[in-house]
Length: 106
Ligand SMILES: [Zn+2]
Image (cartoon, rainbow, N blue to C red; front, side):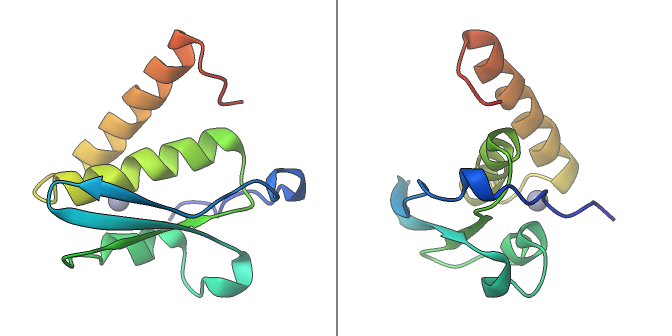
């Protein structure tokens, strides 16, 4: 059981949906509010295994959580064979690497 994303209304405004080409797939990235997600976003995303998947990211969370969620879900799409543990670890390390690079994610 993981805690839900923290609500952060200040971060809500500039989240533009976009599409990401991943191999032959066009992956839709959609930022959604609480009312648009019945189950936690990560759970929902973990079920995705379609030709053109959609990644749902809860819009009202800290930038760090948002970056981590996006990295995590993109990894699932790019490498569906990876275990949940491998994806989580890789996303966490990439997030730290971006942070060390100076990318502002706080
Ligand atoms: Zn996952």
